[in-house]
Amino acid sequence: MERILDSLRKPGAKGEIKATAPTQRASPRLDHQIQGDGSDSVGYTVPVKARMLDRALDRVVRFSGSEAIFFVITSGLLTWALLGVRYGTSDSWQVGISDIQAILAYVFDSLLVRQELNLYEEGMEAAATLQSRLISHDRMFRRILRDSATERLEKGLSLTEERPADVDKYRVKFPSETRFGRFTTCAAHVFGHLITVSLYWAGVFIWIGIGPLYGWSSNWQLYMNSASSALMVFIFAFLANIRERHAAYINKCLDSIFKTDSILELRLRHLTGDDNDNAVVVLPAPKVNFIQRAIYYYADFVGTLTGIGILLVVIVVWVAVGPLLHFSSNWWLIIGTYAGLAGMHDGFVLRNMQNRFGRYVDAEFSHVESEDEKLCGIVGIPLPKQETARRPTLTQKVSEVVNQVSSHELTVLAGILIIIGLIAGASAMRWSTTGQLLCNVPPSLIESFFMIILITGHNAADDKRRIGLRNIYERRLRLLCFVERIKPYVRQDNETPTQDIDSAFVRTVSRE
Image (cartoon, rainbow, N blue to C red):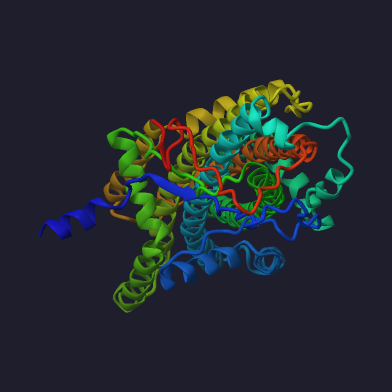
């Protein structure tokens, strides 16, 4: 019974994350002739999950963000728009298209939730790995500075005035985006701009304003439902694509940093004779309140794509009861109503996850930056010029306020209350066509808005992450320059490696 309860409690618990940088082993003779082509370096690889099901689901998520899927979705929407010229006035056309778009949006919701969970875990592990190697760097640099003033100085460990001739070969250009990538990145900043959000709501209010001209009819509601659903599907496909591409770009940047970092470690081990394993870094689990824990619980549930399985069951049941409802317009709207309400809640959850997880990852990379600065101070080398983000404009400041409000856990709770209110209203109308449209149109409008805000948040986080990684890379190169100026100490055959590690450094490091 206890095992069942533990299994039920496990989802939603963001546990501690452990990571260890692969230890670079120096040769027994500590020969200073090390490969200079980077072949002795260890780059970054995305962690592979143990379970086959998880690996399969992650492949589905990556495929959903591919250019092929984006072009298929875009082509489908253009086809829908062209066919709508002829069939758009038909209620069955409007309802059918709305159902299809609501189902697609629901599926993308689940895929984006899993994508967000993956990006969080990968980012935290990458930061922990950098911290693991930093501990070894700190230990070995301290030893070099200590020994250079004692007996080892007489044995050949000393600094030289020569400038490093080989360091530039380690500098690599960070990857550049393709022409399509640059276009979509630019488009992402346009979609996520405050002006775009304002135009979106201006269109909504214009639609409300012309309501009396159409007598607040079902057709008037269906037009907006179809348009907002189409916009939502497009934004979902667009967001999945830019997040996958930007994640791939970040991984390539991490690969350059990890390779430089591993070369630096190997140089230090040749200089010091240090053969101790890199430390295990334990990043503590984030502390959250009850509401936030419940949101994470739901996210883990959706992230396993269980929600898609439930949707398939609902569709089967929906088709089975079709004859009983005579395939009426009410019957057609049922599936869209379910997908729309569930999708709106997922939109609230996604925005919350993006902000929360982004803050966790940024905090760990900020810790890497602070430790880098301390290390440079200990060694006595000047920090390279830091790249900083541009001063935020008024638009960006307003967008940030909207981001913070929309991602708060109380906003997610407010979304649940809105859903309950919509269901109560539709029930009071006995789930008539108008009642079901009440559960379709507002959720579609709200979710479309949240997807635009998601793009805004993603743009800000991606820009900040790229600047941070470039700064980390420059500091690694500066430290490597310093190490290349040190004459290596070659141990004699009758000497053994030094093992006097300072007690201040431990194998496992936990931080609160």
